[in-house]
Image (cartoon, rainbow, N blue to C red; front, side):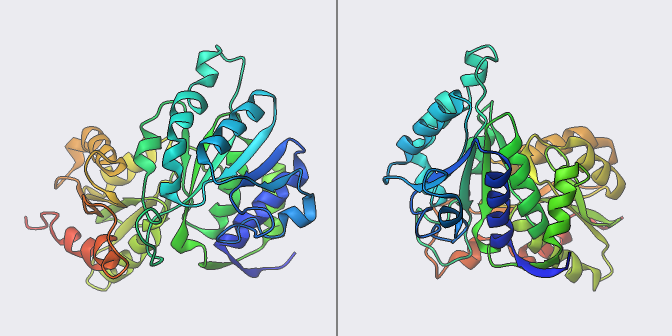
Length: 336
């Protein structure tokens, strides 16, 4: 065992390979995931290692991809499908909302939908419209779906393994701009921890990514590293900021979030998606309700703007930045 610099993309690729190796019912398919290894090379080498029966390309038909996965899951397989980009998944949404999310309930528990829908999402990569959406609210609003989004290299591996092993359907959002981020980890040790059950479970368990006492930043996915950077900047001005990484949006961890906000008395929710009727607005409502008597200021938000995703030249204005987070922290009624 040895510690190595591992990328977020490599952690996901390893998780997929280990799932294929461990469970013969796991299948991986989608547009260009076979020979090419996916647009972002997350499935690189899997077809060569496991064969075209386990990892294969499909036609450019997202609704057909999900419909096929539904049939496979109904027959005991564990399909892991890739929607090539976030907004490419919209043609498949009817299948997801009408069948993937409801099949278990519709059949009174007789048919499980043990499947994972991988969706590269978010901006920061210079993509154009239909390539940079943050669409998590649609899925979080759909009962019957779990919604995961890792923010670290370690969680990229562990959470994808958890998602594939889940008996329920999981929409697994992969922050595109984190694919090239790296961390020093021991992949072999991580594998062993997952195999023997000692690895930290993230489903429904938020983590304190940074301890603090003065205010809480609540976030998930691509915005977590931005929050950590903002907390470091705030520390230079004497502000001790705690950062919560949700990990899973559904199920949501009220307890960890509420405990942090009751301690600090102030909170800001940070998310890349637009703010209106969003996951961020739900977090604000839940936090305000549960922590009302501990709050020294209203819970605020830093989100994307309520517009279609802008062109690459302007996306840096749209995505929550360290500067916007620091400005919002300044608004938390610090005067006595």
